[in-house]
Length: 259
Image (cartoon, rainbow, N blue to C red):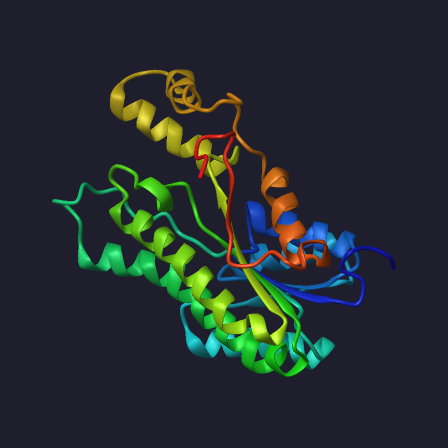
């Protein structure tokens, strides 16, 4: 099979719904063997089955070291290498003002949205990438990680930390031929986003369209990204087309943040 990822093996976390399964399918379409991992086994198995024989599913909580080791070990046993890691797993946490914030909400969000990327990165480096002196790691932050977001101190802090983790990893592994970059989406047009806008609309007693228009107002392009828009950038960064790009945080947000 031809394609940018022919002969390569990829792991995609958070691969049960949303962006994860779409990236996994796109990787497989370009020749990769893909391991999809998520906490919900039924959903991640369905996502892998929809892709076909190039994909397999693993149930894993990527905040648990033993699950991460088993996830990477499964890919190594099946295919003998890991070339691409998409650290896509994330949770929004509970929206709270800082004066309402709880330790559990803050740390539970941080564990998934930042620490898990460290665990998965450490495991693929030790299992495959360092020895083979090749690999690409892509993390997924958020616009909230640049400027903060009201009622999301937990999420904003974790996503901001993930961008710094990206730079640190890139500096440490560059001499081994390994790259690490970060995709920074803005609003993505998914069911999760629609549900969030509907909840805010209900709280404010206004229509969903009013909330949507307010979010899009500061965007030069006046449109939300699709999951495919985000996946296109992620696959580029994971491919050899981006062989001299590392340590970068790149926005996919309709122009909201111009850094």
